[in-house]
Structures are given as structure tokens and as C-alpha cells.
Length: 407
Length: 166
Image 1 (cartoon, chains in turn blue, cyan):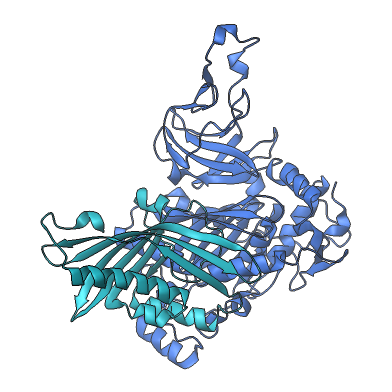
Image 2 (tube, chains in turn brown, cyan; image 1 turned 90 degrees about the horizontal axis):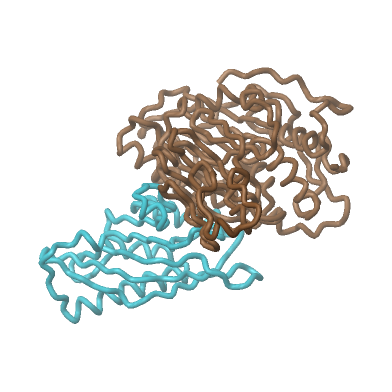
């Protein structure tokens, strides 16, 4: 049970970023206790395709079975627990454990056991790979190891129209992976992704560079949230003039801040899906980030850069190049984000009772104000509820009214 | 890339071999000395630098970790100098002797392997990346330069922020 003093409306105790016991409770309650993102359908377009993923620290395989449906199987042999697949992905109809050659199909059924006749009490029907509950929404694959997750539409709630819009109704294609590990608690990277307060404070190169109109911070139920703003799409000449007159950093290649085909006023968004996913669409970049915790002080970020079905190869090359150069671990903004999260984690040895503040904005929504910590507060409101084992009943102060926001 | 050279290969002269190996060593040395603008000057004006994971490269997926033209190389040098100094790191490149081939059209390709070690302030040395370089070299007058450099790194996971070109 979470000590509710650790998380309140405006601050969190810093022990939540490094306490081992709390971390184990997070794995149990947040990752194994509900829906998490495990992949996208564009990774497994053909029958027999599979990719490795994880639910918390539980390794899983995401497969496309013979019937065309997606399965999520715990990647652990029923016999002695060894991994049954090592590769990031591939195509096969069976998985064979390297240890004793127990063999499963890609729906998890146990097919073969060496020396089966001599093996005591072998009920093959009960010894398949554990199947997680699976839900596919707009090309995103969610899985749950618990027995009674809520319907996925209920869980995603008012974030669902945003997800559908950002994922182009599921018509997404895979452009590649970034996989990197940072020395920081997984929550710090979620906070950073949904924090618009730091945009010009940390990414100081942006000062005067980008045309950033006002935007919205919106918290949804269950800890999800979005920051969004209308996209300016200046011409190259206008951008050059703007940079010459306003920008501290005279960027020579400003292609990130232009789109080749999205009209002016299209929406740029960063959407967090509690607990482990961030969707990002900014100008011509589109991506899904999956957070895989690896201990209280470490998290793997698996980013899938995406394109949209039917786009030209040139457009997809552009998307990939821009994403890599701006948002990946060598990206102009991406590198800063990693450094910032690690800088917080580096001070984990804190005096008891040290707290981190989130007082810029309330839970709820803010229209016309992009800067704030609204969505971080919304995340921790859900965190407190899920970790406390209650149903998210409002505390003493109560959350602000949440309204369904239009994408 | 090395597998696109013409079938009829010419033999490099001793001077060409020396120039090519020297160019690759200069590139590593300049990065380790953080002389990024001098490193950029090793590229032709329309040169290209691409760093990509082996995973994406082998799966023919286009997502790079860095894909820089000349302008972006200069932008990155500005970023390093002006905005990325708050967490300085030291890198050390260890590179192999390159396999060199020359096409009948005079293009020189160089394939070599590398390891880049990184030392962060008050921390131990760690491996940032290992992999191979696939370079296309061009003469500009009597100076051999990079036409393009493809960096294909083996890491399944990157464990440090990537501040500098590999």
C-alpha cells in the first residue's frame, strides 16, 4: 500500500525515484496490474511475425498468429523459465526453448516435449506460454497480465480520439527503432516528455527559433494527458527572416519546423498513455515511445519512428531523418531530455522528506496555456490512486473537472 | 557503400593508401580533441554523415541516429559549443586499419571498424558504441576528403546521450 504522503497534489517525495520496495510495488500495481503498451501492429504485419517486448520487467513476445490476430505471450518456458526467443523479432511459427527444447506455437500452445512419455504429470494443455489479455487500438498493441482489466476503451477514455488521430486510424508503418537506456527512474522520462515548462528553459537553442503559439494542457482520466498546439508552417523564406530577426541560435537547417504536406493549423501533440507510453507528432515526425523500467534507477526507452501508409518514400525518409536529428538520443532536444532526467536521478541520495514540486498548473485542463505541469499532476493523481489500491476516488482537495477534449 | 563499387577495381597507389588511412585517423583524432569544425572540413561541401544502428541498417529501416548534411554538421557543432557544454564528456576512438578499394571511376571506398569509449565527469570509462565505418572518399585537388561516411553501430542499446558524432 502506498504511503499517500509520498504523493500529494503539488509535490512528490523524492524517494519514489529510487526506493526499491516502491519500485516492486509499481511493477505489481501499474505494469502487471493493468494495460501497458507493448508494441505496434506495424512491427508484425505478416502471419508468423513476432517482436520481443516487456510488461514492466516481464519479457513478452508479441506475435501475429495464423488467424491473423495479435497475441502477447510471456517469453518464459513453462518448464524452467528460460527465454524462448532471444531475437528482437523475426518470423516463425514455433518457439523452441534452447534449454530442453520444449516447443510452442506462436499462440503459446505447448507442442512438443522431449522424453514426453517419461515426464511425470505432463498436461500439455496446461503448460503453454502464459497469454496476456490483448487489445489493439489504432495500431497500438496493449497487453495486460491481470485477469480483469477494464475494457480498453474505458481505460483510454477521452484520450482515445487523440490516439486515433495521431495514429492516423492505425494506418501506420514502421520506419525504425531507437533503443537506449538512461540512468533515471522511468517516471522521470514520462514527466519530461509531458512537461512543456522546460521547453525553452532546457532546450535553450529554441529561444526565438520556433514559432510557438499558445496551446493546451489536458489531463484525461486514468493518468493520461496531452499537450497540444496548432502547427505553424512557415515558408523557407519566412523562416529565414524569422531566424535572422529573432533567434539566438541561427539554425541553418530548420526543416523540423516545417511540414511538406500538413496544412497550417494542424495539431502538434505529445500524448502520454499511463503508465508507459508517449505518442509524439510534431511537424513531420511521428513516433511512439515505450518506457521499460529496469530497476528504480534505470529505464530503457524503445522508440518506434512511424510513417503513414501510402506516403512517398521521400516523405518517410524525411520523417526518419528529422526524428533522429531532433528527438533521438543524439537529437537536439532528445539529448537534452536524457541529460535532464539523469541529472535528477544523480541526486537520489536525498535527505529524508525531500520533495519535488509540481505547482505550475492544476490537474484538469488549461486552454491557451502551453506552459505548465498539468499533465504531470494528472499522472501522479492516477499514480496515487493505482498504487494505493483504491479506485481513484478524489482526495480531500479533489481533482478539477475533466472534460472530454476534441482532437 | 562498400558493396556498390564497380566490379573492375583499380589498385590504389601507395600515396592514395597513405592519404586514405591518414584521413581516417585525422577524423578520429579531431573528434576526440573536440575540434568539430576541423572535422567538418574533412567533408566535401555536399558531404553526408549518417550514423545508424545495425538493427535498422539490416532491416532496411531508414531511422538514423544522426543524418547530417554540411549545414546540419555546422548546426551540431554550434549546439555542442553553445548548448551542450553542461555535461562534458571525453571520447576516445579506437579504429582499425581500413580495407581500401578503388573503382575504375576513381572512387575510393574504405571500410574500417571502430570502438568509441566515453568518460564522463567523475565516472568510469564506458563503451559508447562499436561498429564499422563505410566511407566514400573523394579527391578535391590534391586533398582526399569524405564524400560520405556511414557509421553502422552494433549496439542494441545506447547507454549514454550521444553528444558528438561517432
